[in-house]
Image 1 (tube, helix red, strand yellow):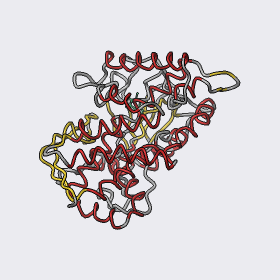
Image 2: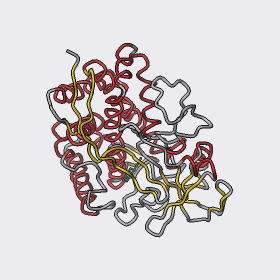
Image 3: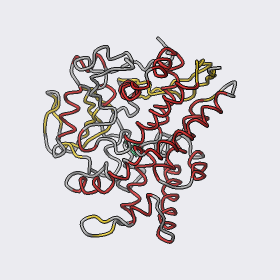
Image 4: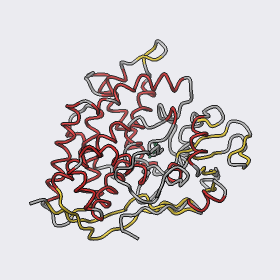
Length: 386
Ligand code: EMZ
């Protein structure tokens, strides 16, 4: 087994029955494992709702640590569509050339720094910084602000001590409250100010709604992006030929990014709450219980993906669900894709090879399934081209 491999722990259950069950704070979750079922369930927003108690569709459930509804992902239609319409243009800005250029500057600086180091801890010293600095572009606020976010560590709701850390969450909440108040006093052209000035159903967004969008923006794209960046570096360490190919054929970069997202599936699954007694995979699902759409399993479904456990760097047919599926598909996907595209471009241009010196895998525990999602830490050495 390669050090950079992310094995698929779901294969057997996916093929045999199509689902698995995981206990979570007395609110068990039936995990749907097949691509077909995941898609079908994601589309049926009436029977499988997102707008349950705030935090309940997240696994592990965050019901005990937050009351603020994250927007738009914890909202059902028709309100969901209203919020989404309001946010869509802003979250497409990563496609603009000047956004891409700024991202390239951020990433080039980090890669240049990495090339000077004998030992780089990729999570802390590279991916966390990259994610935080890139987020200043998405929010359109000064670069220096990223220093504060880097200090928060890998996840805003989880810490080394606890999977659900109230004190840590409070730091983010207080910070966002303060930023919202600042933007009310001195409106600018940042995301807070834009949201505070936005209208929905003929009225201004409330502070609580703005907070809901901002929490999602901070939390949803944090460990997911950090893992995708780190996993990419581990992969290239063991596949220098892919870096060479990307350098010679930059036109395959967009395919490569989709394939890495499919394979890594940085978000293992996302829940839904069942609104009426129904069936999933010929299994009874009672009203007010939880199911989850297991993107990580669906993305290895051999009935759709040939050689699902291999990274085929230029895979053409790739209907993966790494960014979710249906109306709730990831709002930050444009940003995440651009981060990865630029990263691949800069690495291919500057890096000849990468050695993995030491690693500690990050294994998620989902009861009967143990899934490697990335690393707790991974130390590498970059070698430059000349
Ligand atoms: C929630 C979630 C969103 C949740 C798309 O995923 O990401 C998780 O990391 C957070 O803990 O609150 O934002």
